[in-house]
Length: 144
Image (cartoon, rainbow, N blue to C red; front, top):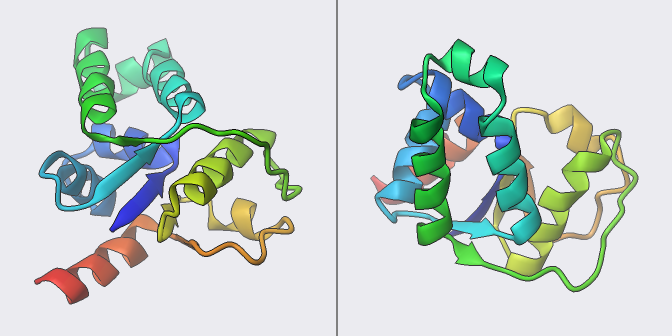
């Protein structure tokens, strides 16, 4: 199963070892699901996890978040984006996740911001936009 993960899932997983976001990160690390990654998504992960306010709130040091992003880059299935998709989402930054999910044939795009993705013209794509809780319930039903 291939998934694309919004940055907010990674941040939530770093903040707490409880919850679906952390479980999804564990599934990626344990190679039970395949993480789709593009250069743009990797740069977004790297940028956000280096922010001082994120490091302070998560009580992490920069090296810990760098190691996590490096591990994701190592484990991920890399995809090049050859064209831009612009489904008129509220947040222009969300388009890079749509592009990655589309290019990788992801089954799911996992985000805590469902409303942001449902607000645009995101129709006709083969992936489903789900919350971390929804995805983890689906995964458990199919794999446990």
